[in-house]
Image (cartoon, rainbow, N blue to C red; front, top):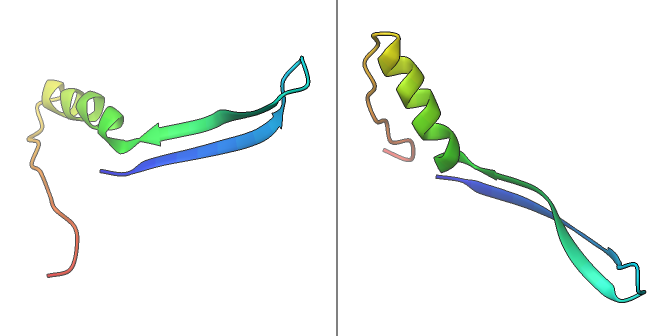
Length: 53
């Protein structure tokens, strides 16, 4: 699974330094809805591992 995040540094309204998360994507969060849609459509879901063979 892959997780990607993006952060931005800036100032809060009271002038203090703060870091906020702009973006987050976790491939594990997308797996379940995709699997459910495939199974509901009558397809078969098979786990596949990618990497060096």
